[in-house]
Length: 113
Image 1 (cartoon, rainbow, N blue to C red):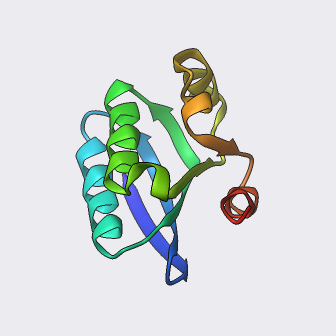
Image 2: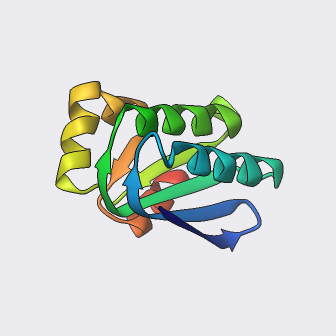
């Protein structure tokens, strides 16, 4: 999986994922979350528009990332879920845990409310 980061401002980061988020790649995402949290980033939008498969290890990486970012003092939003991922988020009720948005712009707007 390829992970790219784009700083919107000092406190806001967009992390774009490209590939499969599974047991093989989940640690890579956790490391990225750790780096972003260490940098003091408070707002993260995870652009998942190019992720076509997620398994339970990938979901666990999202929870771990949320905890690393500081729980309630941060804003972690998910953008651009593909159909398989949307279905998985609904079945596991992750759509109730994370803000899920059609695109990055909508996710950024949600964090600024």
